[in-house]
Amino acid sequence: MSYQRFIGRLSTEERASQKMKKAAAEFYRVHRVPQEIERALNELFVLQPGDVHGYLADYFTKLSAPPRISRLRGREVYDARGQLSIEAEVFCTVCNQEKSMSSAAVSTCLAPKETSLDWKADSQERADHVMTAAQWINEPLNSMLKDQNPCDQSEVDQILSDFFMARNLEDNDMQNREKQESLSPSKHDVVPPSPPPTHTKDKQITNKGKKSNTSEKSFPSAEPPEPVLHGSMAIGSLSLAVAKTGARVQGVPLYQYIAALKYQEAPKQFHIPVSLVTLLCCGRTSPGKLSLLEEIILIPKVGQPIKETITVTLGLQKEMMRMINTSTKAGATQAIVCDNGAPAVSYERPEQPLDLITEACSNLGLGLGAQVHLALNCAAPMLMDYSKGKYEIATGVLKSPEELADMYQTLIYKYPAVVALIDPFRREDADQWEKLSSAIGDSCSLLSDITHKPKAPPLPGVRGHILKHINETTVSNIIHMTLEHKASVLMGTTYNEPCSDSSLSDIVVGLSLDYVKLGGLCGAERTTKYNRLISIEEELAQQGILVYKEKHSPPLFPEKPQEPSTTAERIVSEIA
Image 1: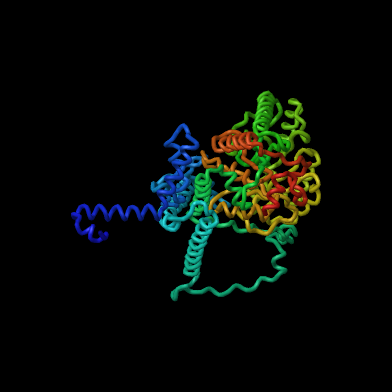
Image 2: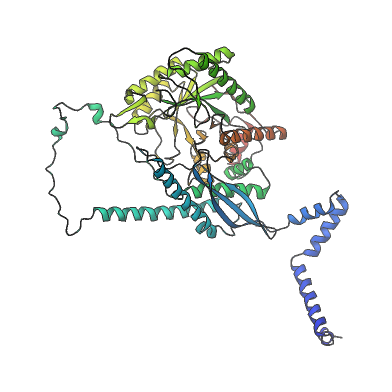
């Protein structure tokens, strides 16, 4: 009997049932369900695991479709300073169900201002930034990243960067139109006559009839600050959240995932960057008159475990606090904790805190200049008094760029344990960067923070660059910059770090950086990152893939990038 005649004799319900069975058989055949079930059962019988259903669940999970981004969520959070920030959360469709995969927040740094606004205006500006970022994440970017592969970091970051560039161009066009409208006179306006030209000789005469000082004439004006587009924090936060999602999808730690992004394949060995720990703060926010030394930073010896570095730092700080509390020297007072997580002490001259550290190390039997070294974060660009053309290194103490360069030379000769100066001048004082580097370059490195000007021309005499993950900086941007600057990048934190995100520790390990600057040892936003570094170090040691870089003498970065000295770096070189 033919199939058609057989079907014809069946009832309507039976015919529907037969049709459904045929469709089901075809569906299973197309998707190879019987073959996979047979293979799973055969392996199950051979292995006979204790958790039978757990084994089957894991077996079929591996056959499931790769996760895809289903939606994004941007929400307001508070950073370490109690200021509004944005957190990006990524949801993916996994095994036909939507799951929250990861969330991330990066530091939010607004454009620096010569004169600070009142706190209400400043808070409102930050709130506008956060509101725009949340709107970007929840609306346009939510649609643009839907169904994207979270493991395709370069594609996601390209979408984010293109979106940001489009918004930036729109903002620039709007500002240009507003500027033109404000400058264009109406038909009722009376245009005043042009003033007579001023001759060069007139410019050389001051109001008192004296010739102007040559150094004042040649004083370079400040470079305009890089504008921060409202909502830019959404880009960096989303990029990091997607990277964390990709690592989770692949079932690997974030540092291994980052390394694979940089080198196309994760290296077989890793090293832990040397942690630069902030010991003291004598900057503008400290209680004393001294403003020059924003941070005095401890540099431990290469290969020292993170736990040991923390123990040494805490011991040294306790000894210094004991000395401060019992000191009768003028200017020494009870210390407070600064925003960078280190004690802020009251001093008038830069030699005083360095003398304190020297004496404390001597009391503890700690070899300053042998076991540990120092770096000074001068943060000089924030100390410039533009009305006088000089740096105010302490209350009422002004120094020209030339005088400041001479002072640095004197400090380095007196304290040879200081092997790095961070931002000793403004970018505009390029001559002094070069002059100082030539004078102390053999024993001390000059480092420049390029966070706000990553594409600016390199400064003469600079050996290392400090980079922070902020605003619109994507994971791909960070990888590109570390490749561009080769072995001269040091990543650091900001004062308004996210409170619970430790991703920076994974990033610096994955990028194979030599140094990381996490700040002091107070505050959850910093200790979270130190704890994560400890965890990674222990994990790598247990797996037998932790290696240490060869010890090198000061300065902090060599004149030229050294050849890879560890097995891990040799492997990386071969991959690249």
